[in-house]
Image 1: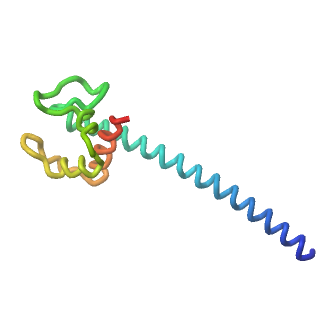
Image 2 (image 1 turned 180 degrees about the horizontal axis):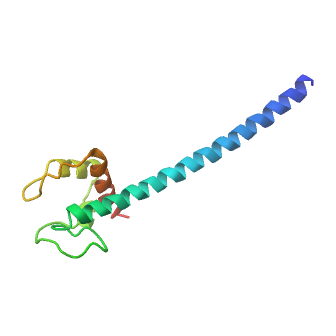
Length: 119
């Protein structure tokens, strides 16, 4: 084998490595999107369990809500709304909202669900 042949082999190996890396990254992105979807679905289940007694939480969750309590859709549509704003509001509740004592994951899933209503 001469240097020219070795150079071509390494060049082909580099191209194959790039192709494999691209598929790996694409697969990871798809898996992340699926995980995000699952987290939003989990947030919806949590909303139906913990929030639907007062808020309209979304389609298929029943239509029971208290007067003067915003729907999750209207909360998501507020100007400059963000996941962090929603999480902070849940962490520091105001009366009559109960202190739910949620884990960080549960809190994030609930906020992700609420923000998903803006789409």
